[in-house]
Amino acid sequence: MSFASLGLNAQLVQAINECGYTEPTPIQTQAIPLVLKGGDLLAGAQTGTGKTAGFGLPMLQRLSETKATPLRNGRAPVRALVLTPTRELAAQVEENIRAYAKHSGLRTLAMFGGVSINPQMKALGGKIDVVVATPGRLLDHVSQRSIDLSRIEMLVLDEADRMLDMGFIRDIQRIIAKMPPKRQNLLFSATFSNEIKKLAESLLTNPEHIEVAKRNATADTIAQRFYGVDKNRKRALLSYLIGHHNWQQVLVFTRTKHGANRLAMQLDKDGLPAMAIHGDKSQGARTRALSQFKSGKLRVLVATDIAARGIDISELPHVVNFELPHVAEDYVHRIGRTGRAGVKGEAMSLVCFAEKPLLKAIERVTKQSIELEILPGFEPLPDSEQPPIEKPAAKRGRGNSGSRGQNSGRGHAGRNSNPRSANNKAPRSNKSPRRSDS
Image (cartoon, rainbow, N blue to C red; front, side, top):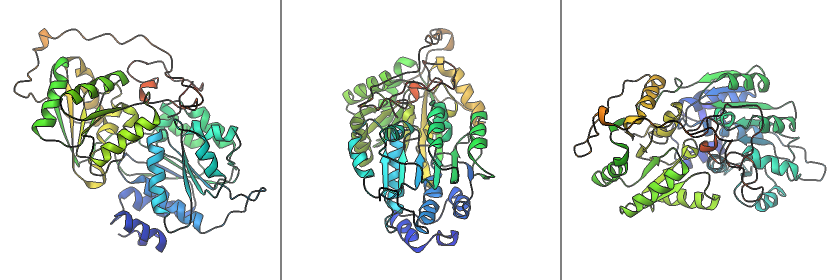
């Protein structure tokens, strides 16, 4: 099957070919014809399935087929809105849609916090058809009247489950209230919790429903390995694996921001160029680290779960869980950074004695039996000699508040600010938390 056979026009097909796409993925095959029909859509898709093109291509075609009536001040209205949970994902999605729109004459804009709002406001003074935004920064623009949502024709909620996890429900409701009731709505989610079903019922009208992969299933293109090791020898094992196998591009996940900083410094001292990326880093620092990692100048990128659904690196070969996530579903999202678009990848997990309950949870979620490998020279102590499992940290508040300039005052800085994260297990509520825009 070709993209042209899905009903896309010549300009979009030309742009797709220039992007190097050869044939549509399953989510694209199912979603594109349905979106072109103009109805609402509820789609279940894991990361790495090509869903951005699944909604971006038909969205651009529908916008190119009609012309919008200018606003009263003569400005062209923003006609399509894509909401994403994190800055990195917003930048990635906008970059892709901009590439698809190359020959269509449609203009796009990425809108997120952590950077100055002024260039975004200046861009909105011209013709912008598609905005890709994090909820917090978008509401900043709404409050300053630099954007008008009254002419939105299409709304996309990308990674909707993550947005709800991060406490964005009130912001999403406020944004929806600013839009016209008649519009096309597309909701993409990797999981379908009760909260997602409730949101879908309130947002979508007679939606089509597609799901391209079993929930919480890991991709067949990812080779998974699990190594048993003492906690205090994890860094030595990681350095050995990278050096012994001569890995040149490795994404490493930790549970905390402090742990990411410390590990990056240690790896750098081991002669392995490394940088950390997480919510406490400025947007400029995050962008520089990601850019150097993508270009191959940086060998190791150490990240918290903020990156699990926001980093899209073509043919990333290796992902390492330096620490297992406290939420088992996050394991699937983490390793989903490799093995994308049919390309094979490897995912390694370093498991200490205290993490064995987390390993059992991953087995239950992924429905697979996991065997720990032991590398010579890194044999862990017998279980009877292991230190006791540390008690969970005391409950804390909802994370970083940030300031309304640099961080825009909205949006969690990352999963470590999430109420479900390791050190902050307070139950979710309908209150809008204080945030530092993702």
